Amino acid sequence: MIITFLGTGTSQGIPVIACDCDVCQSIDFRDKRTRTSIHIEVDGKSLVVDTGPDFRSQMLRERIKHLDAVLFTHAHKDHTAGMDDVRSFNFKQQMDMPVYARKEVIQQLEKEYSYVFAEHKYPGVPQVETHEITNEAFEIAGTRILPIEVMHYKLPVFGFRIQDFTYITDANFIADEELEKIKGTRVLVLNALQKENHISHFTLEEAIQLAQKIGAEQTYFIHMSHKMGKQREVEQELPEGIDFAFDGLKVEL
Picture 1 (cartoon, rainbow, N blue to C red):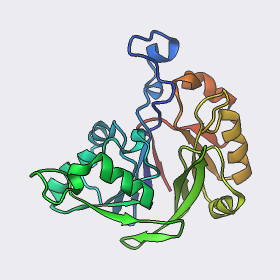
Picture 2: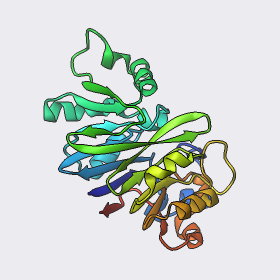
Picture 3: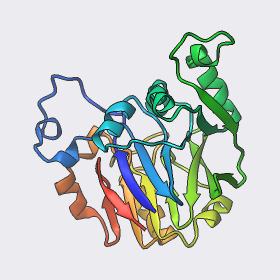
Picture 4: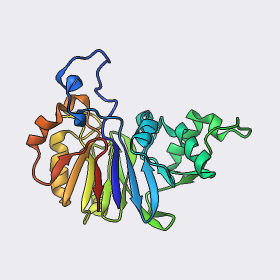
């Protein structure tokens, strides 16, 4: 399995374009975070979790030429706004794109992308094939996917476990029964928005505590906001076995 972090940032806390603070002026490429998304190569298949506003540029940057399916964690725009760009893969692969999401997410996609789901479609619009998932294991072309239901304030969000890899974004609470599903994970990806308290995201300290409780061999933090600070400075505060991910990072299991 090869994991590629397409994006590790968030719209939360991003300043205006004219900002001249230390983070915005940083020359460290790790501080240039696009919206959170990940690409997974497993069992010969190419999967993407979430298509945020930066989806097109992320896929071009990583030169990903084939895509077998898209999984959505939840319906917030910073995780779905790039779905229109699956049309390039429709054209190249001559197939509808399988999309996996819970019922409420599919319903939201149908509203926001009504032209995609219209009875009489305009030529060239994205072609998708929706698959409703619940909090039960499912398969994509023979690969088992185990949803992990987490809470993003009051909104249920799906993380996903694939073999020894678990991916969780946009959360500030995980119930004990869902934590049980994560046990034995070798590589964990977890959101850590900022140092200050937040109503719907884990803070840095909360994410560290949860990562240590889960005890994966390696944990990577994602979904960091501008408020987290410069990576080379904040990473000094991280315990062994926990690191910040960055756009373009590749991990092989």
